[in-house]
Image (cartoon, rainbow, N blue to C red):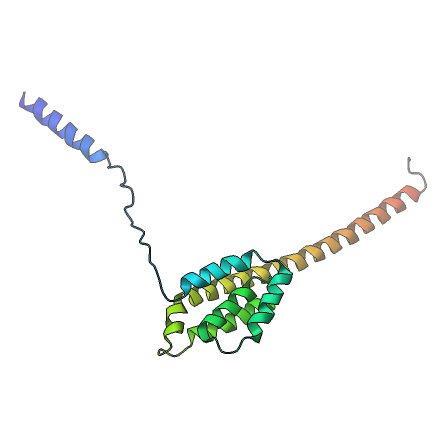
Length: 171
C-alpha cells in the first residue's frame, strides 16, 4: 500500500514537472506623450508634404530656402521636404540639415526638443540612401547580365547558323 502511494505521488510529481505554464501575454503599456515642442506640428507638416506632387514639393523647397532664420524648426522642415524628393543627393542634403539640429548648442531649447526626431530622421535617411545605392548597384548588375545574355544568345544563333550550313547535315 505504501509503495502504491509513493509510486502515485512520484508519478504525479513527474507529470507536474513535465508540464509548462502557458506564456503570459505581454503587459507592456503604451503611454501617449504629448509635446509642446513643435514635434506635433512637424509631424503634421510631414503628412501634408507626403500629399504633394513632386512639382509642388519643389515649390515648397524653394519657399523654405527663401526663408531666413527659422533655426531648428526651419532646418527640420527643409530636411523633411528634401527627404521626400526621391533623390539620393537630396537625402544627403537632408542629413546635413538634420546635423545642424543635432549639433546645436545645449542652450537652444527648440533644437534640444527636436533632437530625438532629428536622430530618427537621420537614421531613416541613411537607410534610404543605403537602399537606394543597393538598388542602383543591382540595376547596373542586371543590365550587365542582360548584355552578357544577349551576347551569348547571338553567339548561339551564329553557331546554329553555321551548323545548318555544314554539308551533309539533315535539315
